[in-house]
Length: 174
Image (cartoon, rainbow, N blue to C red; front, top):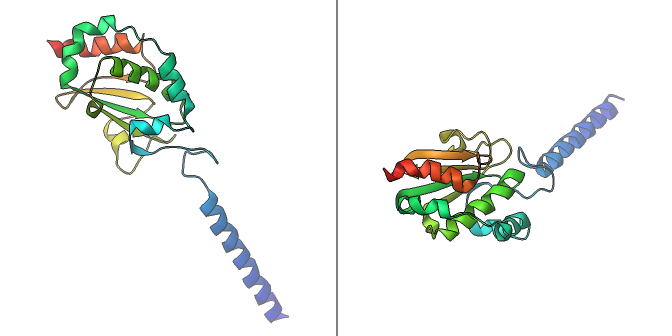
């Protein structure tokens, strides 16, 4: 009887260990929903053109930027770098990032001047970029002038991306 109980106990623990191991392997990363595709860390812009992210292409094509107001700050763009922290899962990123790129492309900003960093819903990452730049919401567009933050647009612009860029970049011109 005692041997039978020990065998049953051993089988019980084997089943428990197997369930935990299998379940642990199948669990998505923190902040990711099951079956959801999510980019993390430094990414190339081409990633946003993948079939699993159609909103980035359709938003880009549909957006008609008002570039006239940016003509005065165009010279500042040579000394500005852009850090874009986004979530490929985020509806605000899917709306604002394509608009930002339409503007940047229309202004002929070199691709080397724009860096993309993707986060999950927790906005935490071992590389520490979200912590370093105090990212609370996405997308966050950070304009760096000579390595110093000139300004940022968080989640959505106050008015339009063009107007907010103008207001951030105008002091850089002085």
